[in-house]
Amino acid sequence: MTRSEPRSTDRPAPVPGYACQVFRADDIYVQSGANLGDPIGEVDAVCPGDVYQLAPESRPLRLVLAPEAEAPGRGLRLLEGSSIGRPGEPVTLSGRMTLMAPDGDTVELLVLRHRSCPAEAGSRATASDTYALPLSPMAPRTDYTLIRATADPGEVRLADLVCISFARGTMIALAGGRQVPIESLAPGDRILTRDHGAQPLRWLGQATLRAVGAFAPVVITAGTLGNAGDLIVGQHHRMFLYQRGQRLTETAELLVQAKHLVDGERVFLREGGFVDYFSLVFDRHEIVYAEGIPAESLMINDATLTHLPDELAEEVKARFPGLSQHQHFGTEAGRRMLDTVGPAALFKRRAG
Image 1 (cartoon, rainbow, N blue to C red):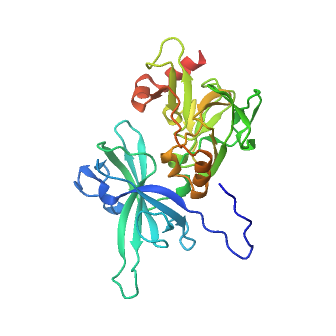
Image 2 (cartoon, rainbow, N blue to C red):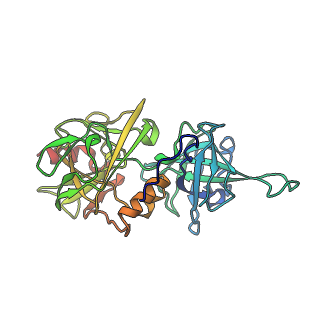
Image 3 (cartoon, rainbow, N blue to C red):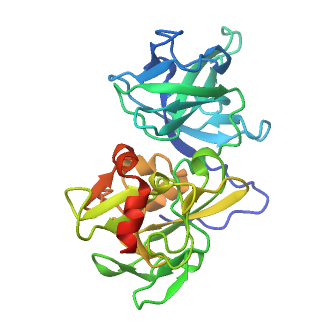
């Protein structure tokens, strides 16, 4: 991306915009339960236990949002590039819902209220529309049971919807074998990858998040997977396990999300405070070595870009014009399989 000339000190820097995908309220409706047929709405009117579904014909809408200084935490406003409304119109975070999928995974969903302003003086009163912003993917024709709902959405930064990989202090192996803290890396550094040897780092992403809910990190204690030190990663970050001897899946290569390894003892969630997350991007989706064990890099594709700040998304587009990275080959271990065998089966196999 082309860097602009330094701005004059007497002009404020433009507020960055953050792109995200939302659904209209009636795209997510009660399929069975007390409020049968009702769409997503005010959280004080919903009933825990109701089962929601995403309509098969639903299509996400793109919003570009900026925080509103007058309403920190909840107040947002639309920017150019949004699929609805006009730039400057207000959007409010009006609640949070927690849904559970059939496999036991939870989906945090934010309820947004958009207020459209009259186009001209003397026009009719403002209208308000409701939208739903899932913080992780939802599949159509899948039952999602409402666990809880609150009018307090908590502190949510829309720029941080991508769970960004490794925590500060994670030791990453360089091409020569030396390990360095992830925060000391810079684009151009040559990183050791499992499949393609030394590869130049193209981009280092960073975000500081409150370590709560979906953003609380997973701590894989030293030795659990053969890792030299505690490995701290985002919940959706995937570890690469090579199965020797008897296999749990058809392929020897297994990818498993860190959250599926949590057993409360050797692997646990660490909630509270803040966490600095860092992500690594290469020309391809790579397997790197963190604390001595293999784990994935951030995979860049269209879905990833919708959740990145606009400025970073433009930079990534310039560096990766094809946006065609594909997932590393291997079997992804789902929650159901791991519930059957238990995380300990993977610990034992890895330790051996």
